[in-house]
Image 1 (cartoon, rainbow, N blue to C red):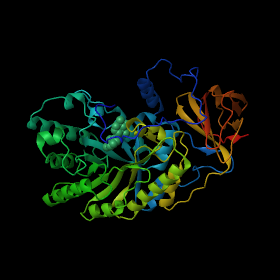
Image 2 (tube, helix red, strand yellow):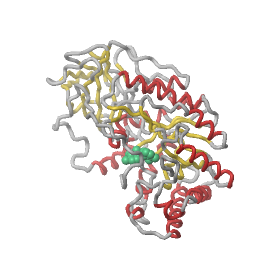
Image 3 (cartoon, rainbow, N blue to C red):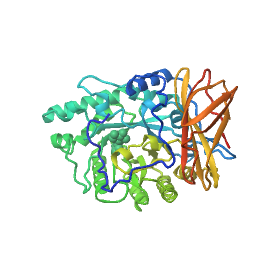
Image 4 (cartoon, rainbow, N blue to C red):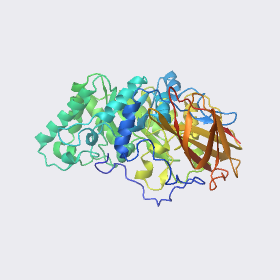
Length: 489
Ligand code: XIL
């Protein structure tokens, strides 16, 4: 839900439209999925409801000798061994199939990307919608994860009734207090940390003029923190902002605010550095900045890490991005009071960047087909783990389940080449649990017994060096839907 514009100013760079080389789009004859005619939202909602409690399936299997990450230690375990947390922002409706599998396996903190914002939870005054927020909290509890509540008091994504109302200062104070009471109270004991106030500063370190600042003055921040503490005394309370990663005017203003709140005895446990970064531009003062906040006696969390690039991505940019992810991880690891890192979406298919910064993207650790990128491996290495390098000079096939419902599923196989190329292809696998392919697109599939063989369509046999092709299918399953190993010929 978007009720008002986003906060970070998109850069003015001219956008080159992203193009996935050699990836034909899904023809319009492609199967519509299991619920023809349902609107996207209600379909997703029903799908989510159907899937609640169903064990998710899906892992990324790379054909050939090497699996990309399935056998590696999950990020959450590597981070835990270092005393850190590893989080991701999530979209509730997507927490199934391969997306749910990765979110549950790799991360031990979840932040609802939008579901807990005021505009999401109270679209009409007095009428609440907690469905997606509840779903994420339930998923987290089922997967041994903590939740970062995001966000209580902000100038953006507020409901129209609030943003467009004309309120006296007293009314504004009451609205804010009730909102905090209601939301923090609802999740008392279930949300470990709250971004109580989001983005209070301008770039020059002055206060951002907002509904709250204009009506209540700078002390709206102290009030919000105090009310949040009252609503859940155990939750860690944060102020969160962007462009405060390095030492600069804005982060110094935040520093001075936190210092004065501490001196006044206002409850404040931590600062969130969003870290929406650009490839090659990790601030050199990141660690120093984290340390100066820690020295004030508060925790520091990297709350929304992504590292964007001008599209299309290429191996040089992805290599630089990996180095950048590693630098951020290392800065946090170097400071005891840095609690850990949350990425703002773990897959490029669930990132806000392309919508907000036209022409830019590829900002997360997994590509849009859930294949781990060099950035993923860099995080592993920063956390002291090891990864198996993907084969060079090879074409690989990655199988993933993109959605699943009570009797059916949609899957895809992505064939990607690096240092090699194909002029035609054939992918085959054996289903392990009686699954049947019912329909395929962007390829021709036949199934005999458990064995499925799919070959290219007339228009997508060519996979150039550095390119990829994806084909998809619907299938049926019952009992379980394990991911098969794909062989490429
Ligand atoms: C973004 C979401 O990811 C998008 O889906 C939404 O359209 C806009 O907001 N800083 C924040 C986050 O604190 O809440 C923003 O999330 C990204 C910038």
